[in-house]
Image (tube, rainbow, N blue to C red):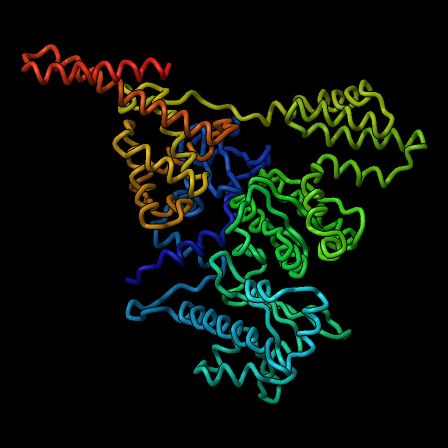
Length: 594
C-alpha cells in the first residue's frame, strides 16, 4: 500500500478549507472571529460547535470533540485515515499516488521537475539582465532607481526578444512535457514552442520557503498588457501565496504592509521598509489572510488610491477582519501608489503614514461620508444610521468611546445622538443576539484530573497555547525553562511530548494535529479546546515570564520540603550543615519571590 508523504497530506489539508467543508454538513453562522452551529456529533438545542477559519480547527464546547478538517471528515463519514485523505483529495482535485513501486507518483515527480525548471529559469533571466542585449531592462531598472542589492535579493531578470528560454531548458535536459507544465513556454497550433515571456523585466514569485513558483513579466515599452503573470499550474496558486513574504519574514514582522504590485513591494524594500508583501492580484483571499495573520501582529493595507484600489482595500479589510486580524489602512495624501510615494517623499515620510494608518472603523466611516452631503438633513440622518451599524460591531468600550468622540467632533453630530442610534439598533437586535450566544456546558472532570488542581491544568493549557501560537523565540524560551517532566495532566503530557518532538525535528508545530490518528481522539479533543479557548493574554512576554517564575518557585519549594524531610533523619554533622546552609539559601530565595 502506498504511503502518503507528509507534504501531500499537508497539501490535501490546506486545499480543503475547514469552513467550506463543514458547511456541507452543518449550518454555520459567523459570530466574531469564528463560526458556530449545532454539533453533528451530539444532540443540542443551542449551538456550541465552533469552527475557526484562521486556525483551521473545529471544537464542540458541549461534547468536547475537536480536530482539523481530516478528523472531521473521518468522524462524520466514518472513514479511516486513508479513506479520508482520498475523499478530501478528490474534493480538491488532487491526484494521489497509485503504485507503491513508484518512488514518486507522476504528479509529484512533475512538480519537482517544474520547481527545478523555475529555479533554473530565474537564474537564467537574472544573468541575462547583466548582458549587453538587456539594455532596455537595464534602462528601466535605472529609471525605477533599483540598486544591485535589490536586483539580487529578488532575483530580478530579463527575458530576451526571442525564444531563448525554451532552447536553454532543453539544453538542461528537461522534456517538452515538463517545460509545458511550467507554463513558461507555450506550444502553438503548428507545433512550435514559444516563450511566454519576451522582452520583459522578470520578477520571480517565491513561496514562503523561497522556492520559485511563478513569474511576473513587466513590459519595457508602451505595449500592452503591462504585466504578464504565470497562470496557475501544478506548483502555483496565486490565492495561496504572497509576493515577498519569503524575504519579509526574515525581519521584524510586528507589522506587515500589503501592497498591490511587485514594484511597490520591491521599491519599499530597497528603501528600508522590509516588512512589505504584495498580493498577487487585487482580490485578497482567505488563504492569503491566514498567511498574514500567521506572520504578523498587525496588517496594514496600502493599495492604490484610485477607485479600483479602494474597492480592493474594502474587500481585503473584510477578509482580514473576519480572520481576526488587527487591520489598518494606510492613507496617502499624494502619489498614486506606494512606489511613487516613497521615491518622491522618502521612507521616513512613508513610515509616518504606517504609524498613522487608520482603523477599519475609521476607513468605513470615511467611505460612507463620501456618499452623503452632510449639509443636507436627510443625508446626515442616513449617515448617522449607517455609522451606528458600524459602531455596533466595535467590541472594545474604550475604542467605542474614542470613535464616537472623533465622529462627534469631525462631523458635527452630538455624542448623545450617536449613542442613542447605536442603542436603538442594539435593542432591536437584542433577542437575535441572545439566540446566537453559545451556551457552554460545565466542563466534565475526568478521572485523571481529580488529583490535579484546576490552576495547574490551566497553566499547562496556556503553555501549549503559547507554543502553538507563538514565535520561535518564545518557543525556545519556554522549551529551555519548562521540561516535559514539569507537566502533570496526562493529556497535556502527551501533547507536550509531541510538540517538543516537533520543535527538535524542525517541523511546523501548526501541523501537530496532523500527526494524530483516531486512536488519539481524546488528545485531539483536548488540544482543539486549548486552541479554541481565549486566554485573554495581553502581554505574551510577561505571561511567559510569570509561568516560568511559578515553575521555578515550585521547584524551590519542592526542594525545601525534601531538605526538611532529610533533616528529620539521622545525618552526619557535615551533611546536616550542608543541608541547613542550602535551606537558608532557599528560604531567602522564596522570600524574594513573594
